[in-house]
Image (tube, rainbow, N blue to C red; front, side, top):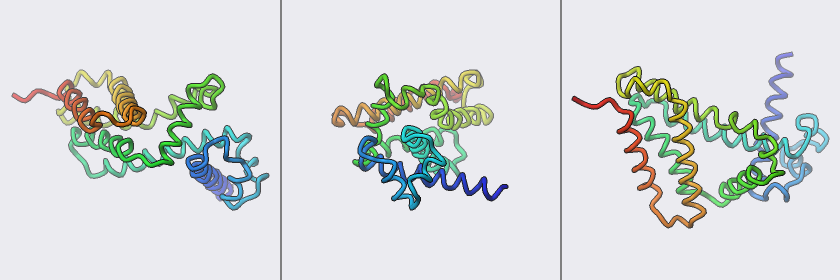
Length: 209
């Protein structure tokens, strides 16, 4: 039974990854389930063995994209022992993402926003998924903060509010990144992120004697 379970997971992931590419290039409306099936090398009917609707495929594709970003972030954090440097690396990942955004990623961002903000949007109808989408990123930052507390780098009192700090950090990074894109990058993104991070770190670091 185990190989069949693994094979099903692999096929589900393959469909989600294939759909992610097509949604990024062509958009949600212009991408059909048949196109996804052909690109994945399977029959259209087979897709429905794994997903009930195209909307479900879109959600899986977005989760796949978030997972890929989290994997790259984890790889960047590996080997960094200093909690301050790890926080800065998280900010740098977002800076790299929004500062050097390509057409397809921009297209995907806009679709995610549209499907989140419109009343009948795919993600808007599944609002319960939003905490799940953000959970991994929140855990990563919270882990860095708690590690900093354990090492005596960050103030011990922040341990009770690491989740709040993590959510706030990601909200700022995503918000300033999208604002930079929408506004035509009229401000220096690095300068804004560096300013925020400097203030955040100063507010949580243990003062030097």
